[in-house]
Amino acid sequence: MNDSKPKIRIQNLIKIFGDRPRTALDQLRQGKTRDQIQAETGNVVAVSDVSFDIARGELFVIMGLSGSGKSTLIRCINSLIPATSGHVFIDDDDIAHVDEARLREIRQTKITMVFQKFALFPHRTVSENVEYGLKVRGVPKQERREKALVTLGQVGLAQWADYKPSALSGGMQQRVGLARALATDAEILLMDEAFSALDPLIRREMQDELLRLQEELQKTIVFISHDIQEALKIGDRVAILKDGALVQVGTPEDIVTKPANDYIAAFTQDVNRAQVLKTGSIVRRIPPYMLSQGSLADGSLEMALEHLHRYDCNPLYVVDQQKHPVGYVTDEQLNNAVKAGDQDIQQVMQTEFPVVPQSSCLEEALPLCDANIPLAVVCEEGEFQGVIEQSDIVSHLVA
Image 1 (cartoon, helix red, strand yellow):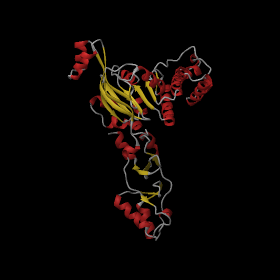
Image 2 (cartoon, rainbow, N blue to C red):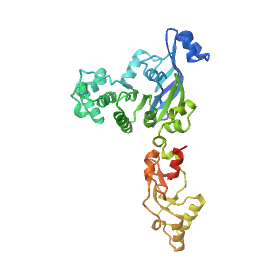
Image 3 (cartoon, rainbow, N blue to C red):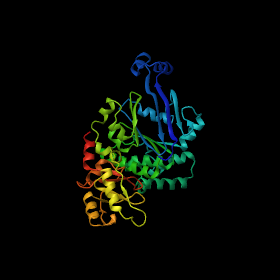
Image 4 (tube, rainbow, N blue to C red):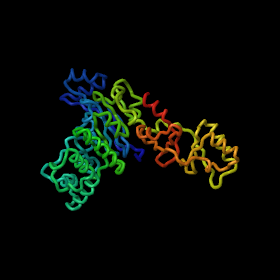
């Protein structure tokens, strides 16, 4: 996510199915419930006044039970299903209100879709399936063949380019569907329960594959799921729908630790918190001691000891001028060194210590915990953020 301007903006989106949508819309705006509207008009409010933004490069998951409106919502994003009311902005274009020519252009250049049932052409080869979107655009045969082979290589299927889809397993076929979407170089990838037809093991592999590709390609992805564990695993943020309405939007940690209501709490009660919570969210931000630039000043050990006592951090982590952790020292070691007349903290501190990125989940961090040494938590640039201990992790897992 590298742009402050949203890539997708959903504003007061409403979709009503039936022969009296305007009557139903008026009733919705008057405050009538979905059930009341259906009973009085026979129309179904599939999406009920939904608004949220999706950042450029975000993997955004929309989830809910059957009938929640999630698949209707994703189809409104590319106007496969026209909205009854509201706006869907892709950059500066309102998809809900552009003319047919502009809509077709946006679909061909900015948006692509991966379906649950693969939707591959059985009579075409794997490569020809991947090339299809490029063929529709009029890309020359050799160029689209080369692009297909590159994209198949990204999903580990280059050697299957000239086989028919029937020769591939379900998981491999879904990789072909993903490669077909990626081959167009579209900025937005819509995935409608793309992994739900797969066996559990293959499904987990595809989730990992999607995360790997997203790390590399940084697409804007809207992923539909009815599986809370899947949503929390892959989503940068998750939106949960119920009866067409938006109940909560937040990071996986927000959803688990700050449920908006009992409905969300019930959804997440069986979630493995160790796989969702990140070390960065529970870190204790204790100031480290920074080494002096160049030669160390006299009295650095006394200064370090004063720092340790002031911030009540034993042991004390030491960082260099770039704020990267380079060692730690205990209260006892500092006191003994001061009594011995030592001056250089680098001669006293321990340089082997456990480090964990703030993006790591608690399940990954727990095995690194040492009973005597707090874990040093660092950001992506390697700068010291603070510490966590085994007791910190346990207390958050049983909360």
